[in-house]
Length: 249
Ligand code: IPE
Ligand code: IPE
Ligand code: MG
Image 1 (cartoon, rainbow, N blue to C red):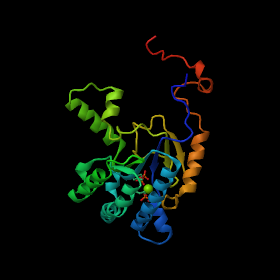
Image 2: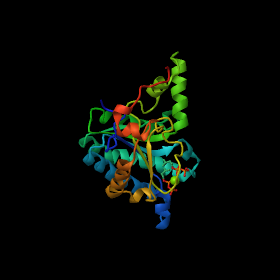
Image 3: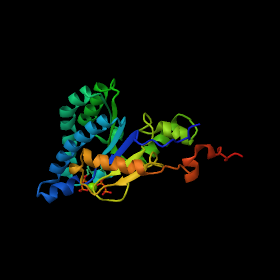
Image 4: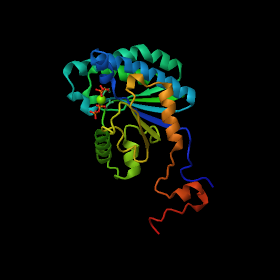
C-alpha cells in the first residue's frame, strides 16, 4: 500500500515570496518601481518554466497586507503596474492555459483594480494547464480571520477541515514547496495556515534575477528533502511500517 504521503519528486504546488525587487533597482540607481516592473518579466519566465516542467499550481506573493505601509508613490506604482500587467499578460496567459486567481482582501482595493482582477479571473476560468494564484493584498492572518468569520456567520463548526475549506486558497492543495527569494529568512505573513508542512527553500537571488535555472535549483533541493509529516524516517522509507493514526486509541 502507498504511504499516506508518498514522496513526490516534483512539487504539485509551488509558492513563491517574490522578494528583492527594490534592491535590484537600487543596485542600478533606478527607482524601486523599475524593480517591480522587472519582477513581472521574471514571473512571466517562471510561469512558462512551471508549465514546461508540469507543475500544476503556482502561488506568488505580489502585495502583502503590510505593503500598504510603504511610501505612497510605491504603493500607487504597484497598483498601476498590476493593472498594466493584467492588460498586457492576460491574453498570452489565456492562450497558454493559465487560470488566474487573486487571493486576497478585495475590500481594500480600488474599483479599477478589483474590476481588473475579476475580469482576468473570468477570462481565464476555463483554463486547466496551470493554476496561478497571484496573492494580492493578501496576508496569512487576514486569511485565517476571514475564514473563521465566514464559518461563524454561516453557523459552521470551526474545525481544521472547515477552516481549510473557507481559506482563500481552498481551490488548491497546500503548497509542497515555498521559495523565498531576496535572501531574507522569513515568511512575512504569506501562507501561514497552508504552509504547515511545506518545504522551505531560501534563495539569495533577487526576484528580477530569478529564472528557470534558479527554479530548477529550488526543485532539485525539494527533491532531496524527506517529507515525514510527523512519521519517522523508517516509516517513510518503508510504508508497511506506517502505523494507524493512534489519536483515539
Ligand atoms: C518584493 O520586493 C515586492 C513587493 C513587496 C511588492 P521588495 O520591494 O520588497 O524588494 P526589496 O526587499 O525592497 O529589495
Ligand atoms: C513580502 O516581502 C511581500 C511580498 C513579496 C509581496 P516584503 O519585502 O514586504 O517582506 P518584509 O517586509 O521584508 O518582511
Ligand atoms: Mg522586500
